[in-house]
Length: 600
Ligand SMILES: Nc1ncnc2c1ncn2[C@@H]1O[C@H](COP(=O)(O)OP(=O)(O)OP(=O)(O)O)[C@@H](O)[C@H]1O
View (cartoon, protein in one colour):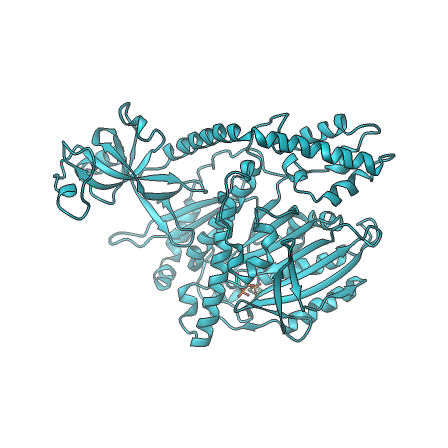
């Protein structure tokens, strides 16, 4: 495939120059107060890539913030290869000309006041091998080391640092000659590093010296893509303790540089030992992806009722990142994710997968904002509504809304630990401990009361959401619509209906009670005129009707978390009349996300 792509770089560049992007549907204002910020960095092409004839195929879209365009060339039997373009929406895109300083200012700097005040903040980078994860994290670590001691953050704090790596599902201490240690969950559900060294640091220079020491111990190897490839996940954990209020939770900042995923092409020359190591890395990244999927599928507006299984205990990496993924976690955390992309034409497949997960995480952040405002349900309040409540209901003197909730939503304030909540209240002039406790109790009472009646709310918002999903799938592109068939003299799809074909359909008045919301379905088998139900899938009966059947048993197709991503539910079936079928739809399976996508 590489050879084919390199042979056609000229055509690729010409088609990319002619590419006219379709504007992405307006997804509303960018989310600014959510707990997860997702950005993408497209690194520059490296000299050896350019000299081997590779060209860039991933671009930040000009004029549309947060959109990445990815252009592949598709191999066809006859004729010149066409361009297959996909676009992805993330929070921000940092193109090849953007510096690490800029990424730090945008993604990580906002985490620092948060962890300084006792919150948990995490930055993790992911992406294929050689995509610039270590380059980005090491730059960011240096900037964090400066910012923590430059006096901008107010108040006295004690800082403690551990740096370790995860390899083969075990943990090794990079500040203690790679000594192995245990990662355990304590009875409060918090992750503990049992046996890892933790150093107290009092200056930028001390912190930088520890980071450098850890880097020298980190396990690297040469890969097809990267001479100094990190073959482990490296984690720098900075614990921030307030010596004046020792009973408060410590703030924790995690800076995580993940090992890169390797495509089949990258591992062709691996020894069996390296293959084993690659398998372990891929397993832990796959669990991470399952956790991202779980997080994206979780409905934050009703999380207490719609339990989503997030398998964060299945790998050491996600155990360490438990605070990011555990839906029942008792501390609010903020997470910044940097999805790193190698722009080369040869890497579009893996880049696509990286970007799909970035989109999934972004959909997790948008859901936090999705529930409609209800004055009796604190979890539906945005920051302005929350501040208003604090101003009116916090007693006299009133608690300062900008100190208690500088940027949080109601849902986020509920996730704040009690000690953090009280500590913030006490910063307002004249507010006593009793007043702070009583306001905390009042806020929580309102939340608990709202939960008792929220089952009804959940049911109705579920209905709204599935209607939205319907609108989205109605818009899905059909590559075999009647216009196409007429123009290119292809037999009408209704003459070609066969098992496995995906069709778009509109439920008629009779079928609407069966499945009012489905608009895509996969054909399973024809039904004879008199057959109300399929009786035997293995015998002749179910399938003996001719291909001119008027009704088909079909599996339903539901929308996934991403736009234009679908899941096929063979077990949820519906009988569809041919007259209700509108067009054939081509879906492409993406093994990485385990969703089907409409082909471009
Ligand atoms: N933004 C950038 N500007 C210039 N060079 C970069 C940039 N990002 C990465 N590089 C270079 O690309 C190469 C690969 O980067 P890096 O080692 O950070 O990749 P990685 O994603 O950490 O890879 P792995 O997963 O294999 O560890 C390095 O030589 C690095 O210096």
